[in-house]
Length: 189
Length: 126
Length: 172
Image (cartoon, one colour):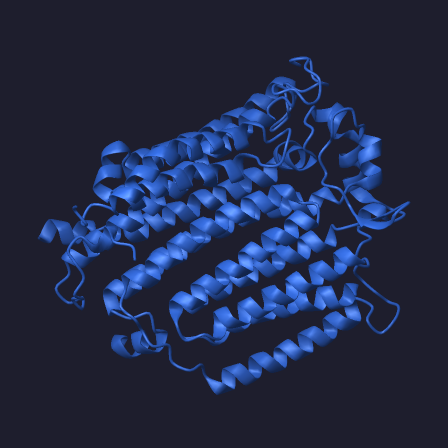
């Protein structure tokens, strides 16, 4: 119970920081508040038994913070205009409906939950699926002791190849966008 | 308690979605997309979380990593669900690559129009 | 002190001391990914952050003399090719992406769980992903730094802002 309360507080902190990140008028404060959200997420990962994710989240957060801070400080200040009132109203309405549906989907009105209750993943149910098999047999089947790595790089390596392709393509796109002068322009000059 | 945690997670997701839809500044949109990503990662981590009842009371589940001399069966009795974690691990780094792509696009826009403001950019384009 | 090429002397000396250790730590995290938390993705980002630190502290020209964007992209691409070749080698044991060196296959290296060379192809994939992620991110960061310096000096229609020349390297 104590752990759940701590996680709840950290998520509330994340929500507050993300609202600040979205609503503040200074772009640098916005980017730094986004960093606070990411670091809180890595603490939650650590508490929820996911040290792999905590390590990755911390270093990714540092690098993306450097990227965004360089963008914001390099260019001159632009005063953000207030957001459109109609769009804000529509978003709030849609958000309210979404949260209400989520409340009933998680069994908030008693019974009929379509998502397993908090603290009891599919792994612990009567029909545990593949996760239980991965946990019980990783050692003799792959020889690795980190079950997450065994799933990423052995059981579901196809998936990882696809995701490596996504990273490759996004980096390639960034190179293409950042190429200094187009070939045509260079030939003319 | 569990429902409150899930609903707060969805509130973070909605905050990110709101920033992507309603904000007019390119940097704010990048920040909103990042927050959207954090919320989804958080939800998947929490779905795999597990409470284990011990003699001292309910505790959080252990990390899915074999300790020395531990068998898979023993791990099964105490560890959290490893599958959602494996799915998120790659997605975190993909988010970084996509952020780099969006930053590159924002810099190009700023070079061409001299502003991060989408409203101004639309006006300048005519 | 030349402000145009990187930060102050304190930052430069600290970077000289620290960046090597950061790079070694990144490789360590990736190499022991199958035994302890970490893995190729986290290790790759740590290794890339060592390169980013050098770009920030010493400036773009200095780090381009060490490794250029093209070379970074070459590392990225060859690691991607290495991943696919490793996946194809799985046909030795019967299929694409089959772990052909683990405990149950005939090519088993025969090591017990918890040793560095356990896990068959998992450490090799981790190394490939380490090089891939590190090369990609460090190269993109270098390209971003180069873009800022280049985009400012040329382009007559861009609004000229009173920042010291070669502003790409200043960070404050």
